[in-house]
Each structure stands twice: as structure tokens, then as C-alpha cells.
Amino acid sequence: MMNIPLLVSSMLERAERYFPKKTVISRTSSGIVTHTYKEVGERTRRLSSALEKIGVKKGERVGTLAWNHHRHLEAYFAIPGIGAVLHTINIRLSPAHIVYIINHAEDKVLLFDEDLLPLLEKVKDQLKSVEAYVLMTDKEELPESSLEPLFHYEKLISEGDPSFEFKKDLGENDPVGMCYTSATTGNPKGVVYSHRGVVLHSMALGLADNAGLSESDIAMPVVPMFHVNAWGLPFASVWFGTTLVMPGPYFTPKILAELIDSEKVTMTAGVPTIWLGLLNELEHGNYDTSSLTRILCGGSAAPKGLIRAFESKYKIPFIHAYGMTETTPLVVLSRLKSYQNDLPEEEKLEIRSKQGSLVPLVEMKIVGANGEVANDGKEMGELLLRGNWIADEYYKDERTNEAFRDGWLYTGDVVTIDEEGVVKIVDRTKDLIKSGGEWISSVDIENALMAHDAVFEAAVIAVQHERWQERPVACVVLKDAAKEHTTKEELYEFLKPQFAKWWLPDDIIFMDEIPKTSVGKFLKRALRDQLKEHLSQVK
Ligand code: ADP
Image 1 (tube, rainbow, N blue to C red):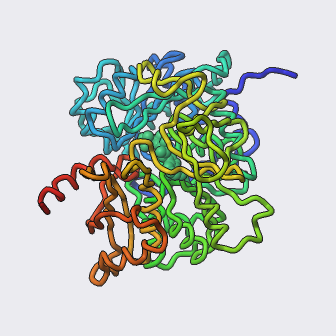
Image 2: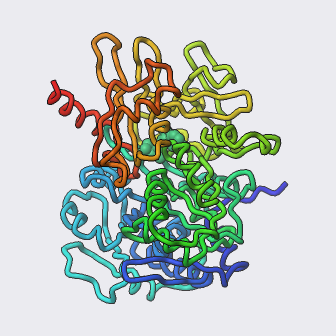
Image 3: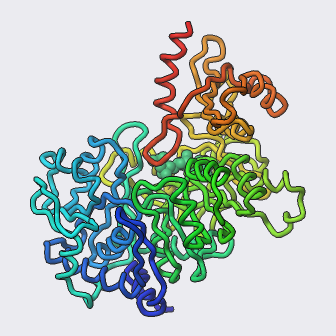
């Protein structure tokens, strides 16, 4: 058979050639703009040529600090189109981490949104490698700025070449992009994606039993383009000629609901906190969401109550998936097997609220205290992964040695696997609660609490205990309408039939908000610190 390098530029070329009329609908700071793939192709080629003129060379990193919009999409293809590396930077990280990431990746040029200007001006003297800045803005003129040299995106591309030829003298294993994991401890760790990995992962997104992304979809990636390439959806959508809806800066649940309604979005993807927010919005507003054929949810465990609410109340199928920055990200996805369709609803929900089965081309091993665990849905072990879109190291980082061993990625996630091959994430190794020598899954208690009608969000953490070593404590945010009348006792009564007695949290603490990471996951480290104060005050 022929052996043709798998390159990201060929995905955009396909869209330009075969889907020139299909569109990218982009919400920017000044409104909604629509471009056809023909236009996106031309604008991307102009950007490629402009970046070359600025001096970006093959293999060099170009950073982006941007929301989900059409210009960011153009950067997704223009940077790899000259053989350079698209480095998407998480704009919600602390300034210190952003500086660390830019210096560590040695970004040569930064493309950024206007709201990042004050931050970049503040830290510019600490940025060691950056030689030019490009502002992605709707405004006609550049603002006053101390950044030097600073280019205006639209002016820059207007001088670029619309028929620029993307570089083809690249290897499929060459780097195409990089992304740093959001650091919950220590500095962020860099993961480098290859052309080959991204192309194969995109192909997998199109499989019917996977995300089933297709030309007829209108896809809205809510997961940020700076978080594992918005789970690969921009790449795959362009390749398949899928209509893209980009929710832009500072979107709210209301904005998302309006976009779903007005643009007739068929599929969308994001972390559970986004869908909790949307659910709340749908309960209060009047939106037509009937176009949605599925919501893809991952990044942290999707509470069963959330899945139930979307499916039974709004008839929107909910697909639970699992992955990580190191895995491009999609590796496990939850769908029923054909012979399970006739099971009782609750049983089906139980299966689908697990993270699911392994997607093709990825392999796993689950290793517990006594070697590989049994497929019994009970024995717990750490999930190990390998495959064509799984990283094999952290970029210039000695933490590689801990996570990558014997050809496997050690995910740090503790899981079980049942006789159907369905994986359930029990916890992150560091969040499991060890009580009297037995493990308690914080995720299970959280999900049970979030299935209660009065509960908006719940996070469960371990607190030190003299006798039992660690005990669970639940932090609960109640829905506004339930705040006045809901009691701890009521929640305990709700949990009791569902868990062994020793699993029940030692306390349930009501809070106004649960601290979150930059990508919307519960920040348990901050919660532990917060609670330390709370518990000492109680004493
Ligand atoms: P970060 O490490 O910055 O939080 P990642 O997106 O790489 O960013 O996080 C990956 C981790 O998120 C996984 O290792 C796992 O612990 C968790 N995770 C991802 N998807 C799920 C899911 N569906 N259910 C439970 N945990 C999940």
C-alpha cells in the first residue's frame, strides 16, 4: 500500500475543495460573523504566509492566547501549515504559569485576544523568546500598547498571500501542536501532538460509535480551544466539512442556549460544569434545543442526575467520555451495546454514566496491587494507556519518568472495568479517600449528591482523621430555589440507602461556590485549604 504522510494541512485542503460553501459561525466581541470554508482557507493561507514573513520557521512554536473563534481556527491550520507548532495557551492560568509556559515552550510569536493585552503588557519583560505579537481584534486600529512589535491580525493577513502553498516536506511524526496540562500541583507539563496523532484522532471522532461527527452536523465546541485542542473537534469538523459554531469570549449559559437555538446546533462538547449551567438556564428560559442530537461530556465525571435531566426532560442524548491532555484527548466513550437497548431505563443510565469503552486504536491495562485487575467492576487499579494519539513524554520535563514507563502512560486515574469492558473512573489517585484501610470514591458520593433535586454542585474531599486516617466531607452548593428549605439531614437520608454506612461523609457543608480549576473542574486542593480553616474554626 502507499504510504502518504498524514498531515493536518490536508484536512483544510479537503474543506476548501469539497465543502467551500459550508460555514464557520463565530461569535466575537462585537457580534456574530460567518465565513465559508473557502474564505477560511484563504484567510488561513494568508496567515501562514504572513507568519513566514515575520520570521517563523519550521519547528518553532507560535503561541495562541484566545477564545473559541474563527481567527483561532485559522491559527490552528496556518501555524502547522508552515511546519511550525501551534501552542495553545490556557488563558485562565495564573500569570506566573502563563509566563512559565511561554518561556518553557520558547514561543516565538504570540497571537492573542484583546482581553489578554493587559496581562501580556504586564509580563512582557519576563518573556524570553517572544519576538512579535499579533492582536486578534474586530477593531480597525490597534490600541495604544507597549508590546513591540505588535501586529493587527486583519491588516497582517490582508498583506498575506491567499494562494500560499502549505508545506508538504513534513513528516507525519513532526510536531503539530502543544498543550500544557493545567497544573494542580507544580508547574504545568507540556504535551506535544504530532500530525499523525491529530489526524488519526480526528478520524476516530468521526466513527459512528464514537462522537459520530459528520458533514451534516452543526458542531459547537464549548470546551476551549486551549484545552486539548477543544478535544480535537476543530480539526475533525474542518476535515469533514462540518458546520462549526464558535461560542467566542466570555460566553454564558444564556449565550450557549441562544446559539443552540438560533444556529440549530446538533452536537456540542464540554465539561460537566458547563452542562450544569446550561441545564439551569434551560429550566428558566424558553429555548428550542430540539436540533441537538448529542452532548459530549468529559473532563470530569458526569453526574448521573445531569445525564438523566438532559435525556428525560429535554430529550437530548448525553455521551459521557474520558480523556486527558496527554491523550489528545479521546480514549474512552460511553455508548450502549445494541443488545443493551432493551434494559430497564435505570440500568441503561447506570451503564452510560460510566466512562465507557476503549475507542479503536488505543490499548489499555488496568493494574492493581496484585497485577492486572479482574473484569468484575469491583477491583480497582490504575489505568495505563498506549496508542497512536497517546503522548510518550512530557516536553523537556523530568516528570516524564514517573508517568511514562515501559511503553505505557500511567494516567494516575484509578478505575474498574466490568465484564462488558466498560471502564469506570473511581477517582484520581490523589483524590481517593483512604478510610480505615479501605478506599472511598469521592466521585461516587459527589454524583449521588448531585442527583438530589436541591443540589447544584457537590465536591467531596478527604480530611485527616485520627482513627480512620481520612474521612470524606462533602461540600454542597444548593440550587437557589432550594436554599431556604434544604437541610443536611435531608441529604443524609437521601444518601443512606445508596452507600455503606462508613462511606457517608462525616459532614456536609453548604457553600456558595466550589472553587474550580481553569478548565472548570473542582479544585480540590483549594477546597481542602478552605476547609482546613473552616474545620479549625468549628473546633
Ligand atoms: P488537567 O489534568 O489539567 O485537569 P486534563 O483535561 O488533562 O486536564 O485532565 C485529565 C483528567 O481529568 C483525567 O486524568 C481524569 O482524572 C479526569 N477526567 C477526564 N474525563 C473524565 C471523566 N469523564 N470522568 C472522570 N474523570 C475524568
